Image (cartoon, helix red, strand yellow):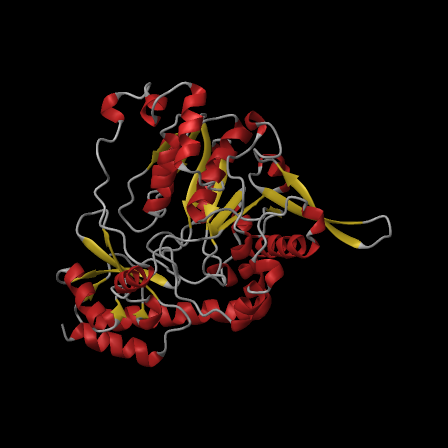
Length: 443
């Protein structure tokens, strides 16, 4: 909305025209206790020079993760981004484009989205992928809502090993009364299929699980999927797209909807986002899929053309008929993911995943050998794992930060106490890992 300045005389003229003597009379219906009395408690205005100096001073209090050796993960990962990705993103026709409101005019944008969708389908093994969602958490919630629409049920069962912030996002939606969320208590680092089965009944729309889960462990998707199918519920799987380079796709285990956080595919770590919500499903469910879908066809001359095929969002159809209140997708991040996957290729993605897994296992063994860490469980994991620290984990983390390392992410263990979740990407060298272990052991 544009700001149109007016003069004092113009203001007085308008007030006189509507028959009031002051602006306060326009808000006479607002309760007095809700009206701000006096001025906001703000500092005095600054000149532009002083403001720039002030903001830079605030920014300099942060230490960019790119200047640290990062072993942090828990949903955001320090992967290498090929330079070609940024080169493509900064092309003016992509970088400045918002949602195309005459979409067929933007053939390049539609082709980019179509190819992104195709690669997400290849990764997940699913039939259809949408043009992306805000982040992994919103994709996770939309999967639960979609399952409710398909099954005409309103209860979802969520494994306790899913990222706690994703569960919190789901519960925020549930507070509106749209659905009921039931979860189990996870104490062993993995979902317990029998525990989930005890929560499932004929009201259950979906069973939701993440693999690798929040602490990096690989779930038994076959067993959990059987729990969902036995109740006539949908099976929703969240996964890490890098790990899908070496893991069986969730479709192999009967997943109906697959979601994930796409940040590892060509987007830098960014506190607060933007993220990239991956969303894919079976073709039979496509009419209930949220967001937008780009398809490919031919024009009257037989040339390939890309079209906005499905867009069941509020801006295009009646609100009560919309599948989601999410109006836009993260097109630039989706384009980054597509460019990243094109740049590394299928074999490259496998190599990256294997490198991450191998280095993670090397770090875990090295940390355990120091005697300062212990393993709470011995379950299969990918490139992320959790260990208990023999001491104050937060103090260790702070000390290592002062030495130039992000020493994992300290989380609360289900059994009580703290765990440290470490992630090792292909960027970490043998020398960095050895130096980190040496520093930790010296504390």
